[in-house]
Length: 149
Image (cartoon, rainbow, N blue to C red; front, side, top):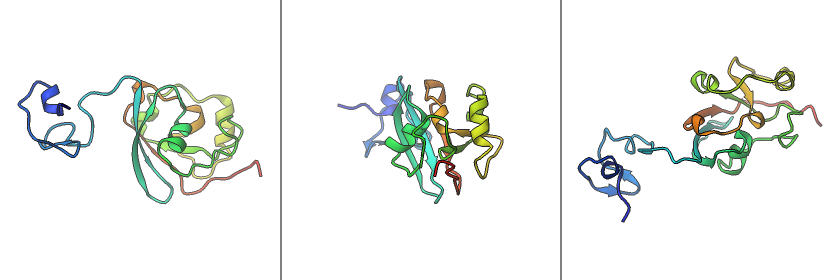
């Protein structure tokens, strides 16, 4: 039997339906899990067209791989993650951006070629998913520029 989030948290158990707790103030009812799963990272991504997807990906892969393979969003990634283009450019929330290591000089050079760059822009091929990034939220920009063609 699968225990609902309230039971796992030691609270009185409420009906568990369709994978969601029926308690309105419960973390699972709000759309998150009661406890993060080690080795798994929750990602929330919005496509250039405005399609919002939330998915879970394994820690250790790049954000670009997660968006492409687990989020099933159309991200060009023309250089296949070698930091040789800017087609995997994403915009992060400021709080997520601050959790990342600094931007390398190679990545800065590629971001210089990207349209719609913001202060929280990164190349998703250069962002490795870690447990610290659980819940990361990204926006794919409205346009990309493929310098490889």
